[in-house]
Amino acid sequence: MILSPCAHEKEIVRQLALGHWPQAVPTELLLHAATCRACGDLVLVTQSLRVARANTLAAARPAAPGTLWWRAQLRRRSLAVERIGKPILGAQLFAFSLYLLVAVGFLISQARHGFGWLLWLQQQHAEFHLHALLPRPFLNSGPGLAFLLSALAALGLLSLITVVLSVDRK
Image (cartoon, rainbow, N blue to C red; front, side, top):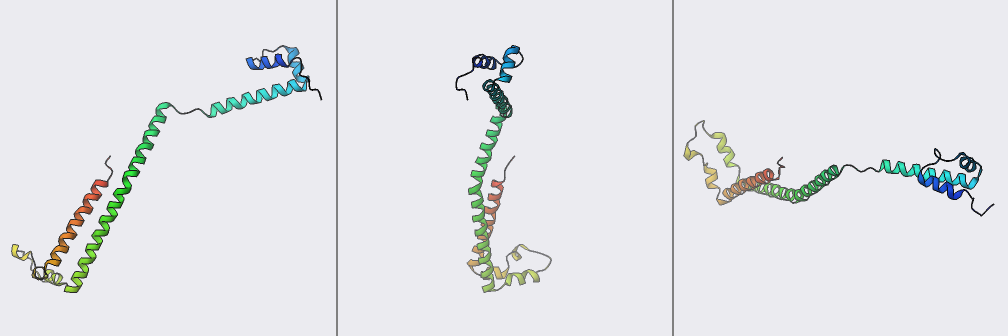
């Protein structure tokens, strides 16, 4: 085992740094690198690292700046739409639950007072007059039914407005 450096090592390092190895190197230096273990290892390691660096640089080519900017804008917009969509979904679910609550309340109210207005619709004639549009069971059922019907209509309208406003306009 020899610890002293080879006399040709500096020249080989210089040739490798300049990128002349092995095309523009004197033949005696090529023969020395083939016979000297330290110089041969130096050439092998340097060329291996140079090839690995070239492969890494070729694989790591970033996309064009315009493409990167476009992707960033697209990501920013999609995150904004997602952030805005969460409260809208909550409002839709709230409106739908209120709509169902009013509908259940209406059905319970009609179950207690009887479905007299359904019977009226079945017995109606083919002709309608303006005074016949409000059935007697509706007028006799009290203010509860009128309130439930108006609340049901208002919540239906609120649900419709919420859905229309939440649709993505493109």
